[in-house]
Length: 311
Image 1 (cartoon, rainbow, N blue to C red):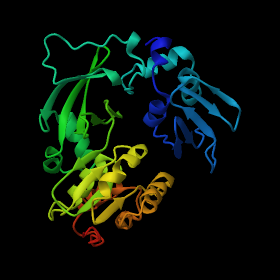
Image 2 (cartoon, one colour):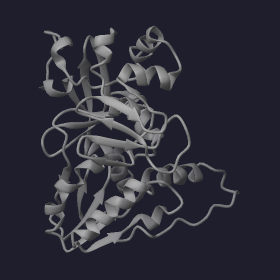
Image 3 (cartoon, rainbow, N blue to C red):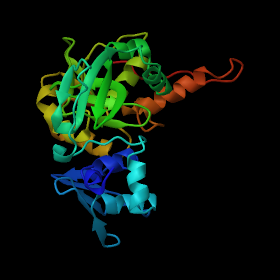
Image 4 (cartoon, rainbow, N blue to C red):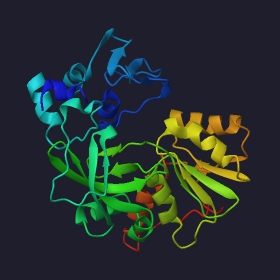
């Protein structure tokens, strides 16, 4: 990877890969708690349009290479090798220098040039053991996932990758594997209509699959809206206004709290359902913990499962 190619990497994506997420987003400005020190108020700003950052706490800033060298404490050469190692997968913001093509021998299902990812094939879940193991590591019931996800095979540059994919209402895919969390364009929410008067709203599709896995013995009688990003919450408001009751499953963090406030301020009949995972950040953490308890020897004391998921 060259410096020019590296500069096409979104700083927001780089931070996401490092599990660093914004506290709030205002237009193109993403505000974070600084990754370089402990703080309670976000002072680290990323402008997504300019793809530049500025740390108000220490007065330093720059492009993605400057940030990468500081984050990983390495020189430029080592950074480029790390970014090109396969441990990360980013979506280039400008495709002029990437020259992405699908192999002529392939059978492309869809080409999405805007994101820098080209989907080369779509398959039903179960044929790729690595994807299956990843879903199992997250506690997801494969039978549940098969109804909503696919194996997505895609190309970035001259490299081929695969992931579990969850389609949004505009035809884009959320992609997840053991090393990557991202999406193709167009980015959008997912709306699953089952003909019910109530709706469950979840931040991401792993939360959605986790909820269904937790309730696999008793089907939930609602429709579903999966935001796929808190920044897309506004797009869901008009949809959920048509439901009598909105069950919201926010993460237990600052962004989740603001999401709940947004829905309540919109005048929706909103029920905060996050109490069922009050000791965990989100539904998936609850699911993984429940799976671990199930694997404990029978003679060990296990707390009774909560019935708090009833709708």
